[in-house]
Each structure stands twice: as C-alpha cells, then as structure tokens.
Image (cartoon, rainbow, N blue to C red; front, side, top):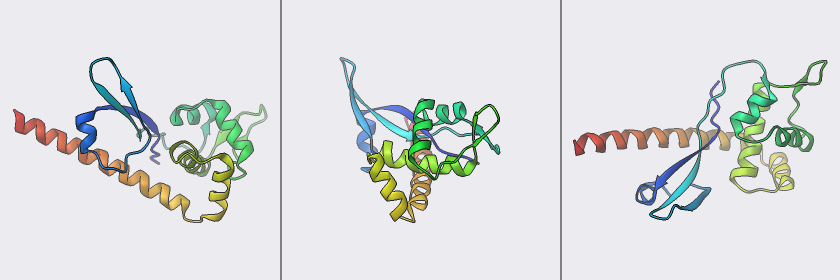
Length: 155
C-alpha cells in the first residue's frame, strides 16, 4: 500500500511560475540573494504492513506523536489497536483516516471542529483526498519528465 505523505521541496520562483495554480501551502523564503518558495508535496511511502506503530505514523506524516494521540482523542474514526503495554498500532484504515484528517487540517486549513463536520457531512471526502494525491503524484512525474527533456535539449 502506497500512501503519499508530507515532504517539502524548494523551487526557484522561475520554476514556480510554471507550476499550476493548484499548488497550495507555500511560504516565501528569503535567503538574501534570490527568493525561493517552499511547496509542500505528499511524497513519502509507508511499507505494506498490517499494523504501524505511532512512531512510524508520526514520522511518515512529519508530525509529533502527541499530535497523532490528540487526533485519536478528537476524531472517533481513528481507533488504533493497543497491546497489553498500551502501545498503539494503526491499521491501514486508520492511516487512510489520518490522511484525510491531515489533508483537512494541515493542507486545507480547517479547524478541528470544521474537520469533524466535514467528515460527518461529506461522504465523498476520502475519494477527494485520494484523487488529489493521485493528481499530485502524476503532476510530480510529469514535471520530472519535463525537466529531463529540457536537460537533454540543453546538452
């Protein structure tokens, strides 16, 4: 199971102007000479397993484990299994739900209450998140292909 997760890439402004307007979550970085923009893209894959520890999940989403525990308390759709010691183990279904919550809260800027309402009222939210992830992956691959073609033309 491939799950696309948060990572940051830095693009020069020239390259950024070529990217589509659908790119979100960018911050201007001033390094003294030229401005660059940070764009958050979903990139990291989790291995195909039955259960993931909270550390693996937090690392994949690039958040603290305390945030994962907090979301577990706030959103009833996240129900990790716990062993006798109390360690949390998340199923692939929990990961998909966390990905939806992450998309709503971190990428779209919803409040936690707004995300709860969106999860209960919008039945197609998981399909939307899946579609966005697929499109971002295709876009990244097309940009790589375009860059490799321009490099060949310049040589």
